[in-house]
Each structure stands twice: as C-alpha cells, then as structure tokens.
Amino acid sequence: MMRKYRFKRIVLFAAVLLLMAGCIPERKIGAEYLSKRQNITLVIRAPEWIKMENLSYDSLKDVEGLSQREQDSIKYYNSQLLQNIKDSTFIGNYVKNLKITLENQGYKTMLASVNDTIFPVTGNAFLINIGQIELDESKIPIRDETQYNGKLYGADYDIAKLEMCFWIEVCKIENGIALQPPRLLFDSQEQTDDDDGYFKLDDQSNKMNYVLNQKEIQPEDVYSYASSIGSDHGFRLNDFLLNEYIAYSLPQKKNRVLLGVNPNFGLLLRIGAPPFQEIHQ
Image (cartoon, rainbow, N blue to C red; front, side, top):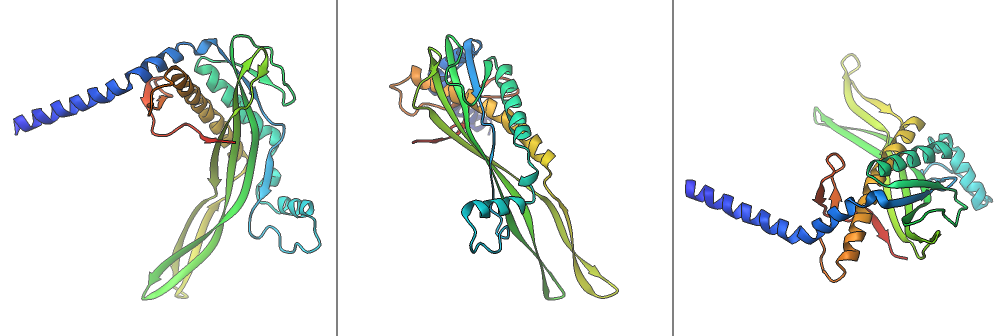
C-alpha cells in the first residue's frame, strides 16, 4: 500500500511538472507583461445613451396601424423596469468601476468623449471603446407543481429578466490615432426577479393555495450590478491584453496556453476560455 501511495505521488508530481513546463514560455512572458502595465495608458470611451428594448410577450397587444417607432415607444412605457433606468447612472457606475479596477492593476487611464478621435497620449496606449450597451427586458414563465392526495396542483406566474449586453472595441493608439480595424469583444449578463413560491393547504376549506413571495428587480439593483460588471470587465480586459501580448511574443507557437490573473492575489493562472467572446467582423 505504501509503495502504491508513493508511486501515485511521484506520478502526480511528474504530471504537475510537465504541466508547468508546458506553460513556462507563456508564464514568463505573462509575468513580463504584468511588470510593464504601469507604462500602458488605456483610454476609455463610453456611449452617452443605452439602447433599451422591451421584449416581454405582453408589452404590446395591438400593433395594427402603428409604426415601428410607435410600437417601440409603447413597449418601452409598458416596461416594468426599463422606463425607470437612467442611462447616465448606469453608464457612470460601469465606467467608474472599470476605470478603478484597471488603475488598481497598474494601468494609467484616461476618459474620452464619444466624439473624440484624437487622443493626447504618448507611448504604449490602447483605446477601450464601449461601442454599445443594450438592456433587454423580458419575462420568464414559471410553472410550479405539487401532488397531494393523488391530485396534481399547479401555479403559473412570470418573473422579469433583464439582459445586459456590452460591445467593446479594443485598438492600439499610435500618434494619437486609434488604429483600425478594432478587435470587437462581447459580453452579456442578466438579472432576474427573486421568487420563492410554495403550495399551502387551507385546513378549514381544504383548498390548496399558492403563496408567492417575489422581489422585483429595482433600478438600484441594476445600478449596483452595472458597477460589478465594470469591475469584472476591468479584470477581463487585463486578461485579454495579457494574452494578446503573449500571442505577439510567441507568434509561431500553436495551441498557446491562455492565462489569467487571480484578482485577489495577482498570480498568473491558466484559464479554460478567452475572457470575452470575440466577434469577427
């Protein structure tokens, strides 16, 4: 038993060494990149407004004779949440935490207006252009069932869902001009109402009732989530730039290992997928 245990430990240790050895070039170059982040300026440019669409199935009953613009307007004002969301607050919370997170990782940052095309930066710089933010509201039908004394009881209700989509363009800045074409990255997150439902038998009437405790999404919840997404995107943009640097340094190596940075300890670690979905135009 002891020999088998020692043999297993040796095999495991050898496997770990092989894994580390396979990552040595990427890790070495990755560590080099992390040491250079203080020399990189990231120019953040965000939209002035958010595209909002109410996709709920009951948001518009009669469309006869209405233009598309009129339909969209009616659906917007029939929304549970969208009509109460302020573009400036959502974007402000997102950008604030994106900027703070990037700076905490060592980058220099600069905010640019949506109309800016020339950027007063020198040296190594990138434009992080939040090309579009879209909020889509919809409803998810929920069916809850239970059996009691051989009889099936059911209850139906809806919960609201808000999907938040981000399109982020990343491109190098040279001589104050963003080089084209940009790399286009995409990410989506969602929030839903909190729901807790259960069946309760009324002993007096022998009737099965359904009790639903539902906490609807509030604008404050959305603004708070926008802040969290901004922080998350700050870490993931660092991972994206890190792997781009590794790819530039190892152009001939196939099947390069993807690396990320642990946000709590700042250590390089292997990740299983790119930090963003890239859209190839």
